[in-house]
Image (tube, rainbow, N blue to C red; front, side, top):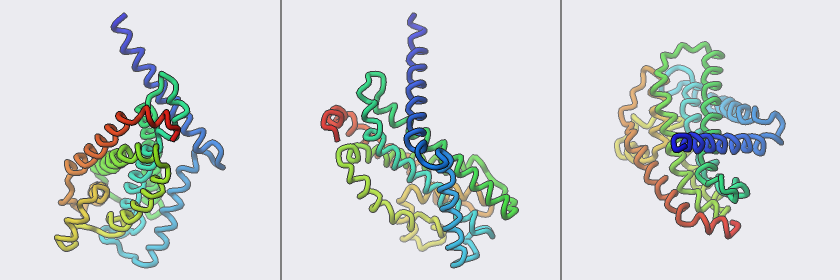
Length: 264
């Protein structure tokens, strides 16, 4: 009997996560034209549009010979980070009606949104990279492990920031809009359109304090065999993510009951 109990607990946990993911897909994408496919069409269209705009400004990328693939290697890790932050930070408020059930916890809600977001964004990344390589007939020697490590850094940092934002977003919904405005400059300074490595030391050191910039550098390290991300510190990225995530979980543990009772 004692041996079957952990199995039952694991099954209940997996079933709960699966149900929450299906609910997320149906409520978020079920009412829009194209449904879940829209989550793929939107970033693909965004990359295509921004590529056209910036290709007109500069046709020669800092590394490689194809601007679309250079831009995609910067934009897609950043998009992964942004999607994880947005969905994780709103997970408690979004799933609040279900949290009244004894079998559903806020950890379940966070994990469900995290998994669905990461799976979707990784599939989007694979599709866009494959499309660009096929359309432009690119022959790249890709180190898939390095690319995966770069995307993992972006996802983990997004999780840390999302957890840190989870409590304020649940109590003060306006914080999500404020954070979006505060986060916007990262799109410019994270190295999406340029390389951080050749910049003057002081400027480079300042920009490297941004973990998402290092995730982009690591992704490019795997996509371009002529590029070596010498200044990437995975330990730094994971440490910052862990600290932010721990602070966020402490706040949720402390004020979780109040969040449910206040109806915020």
